[in-house]
Image (tube, rainbow, N blue to C red; front, side, top):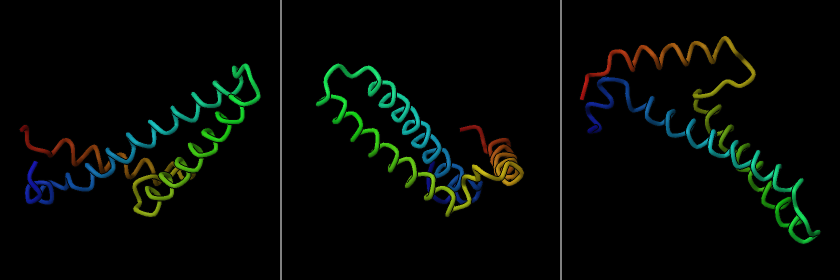
Length: 99
């Protein structure tokens, strides 16, 4: 979608949010996978490596969440605010032209 059309329809914000939320979900999946892998590690060296990677994934999750919260895209501790954001996104999506 071109930039002018994105701004006219409000899709520019939704696009940023969709990308950020997709990335956050991917990071969460990585955290779960690393945590599971740490419990399955067969040598101390592998466990140390996986634990380090888990810590890096947790840091990435925190940074991604902060990015989204600072921009008003994600309200993990305020359900009412998150519902407002989600409803606004639904309205934008419903008004978007079929391309």
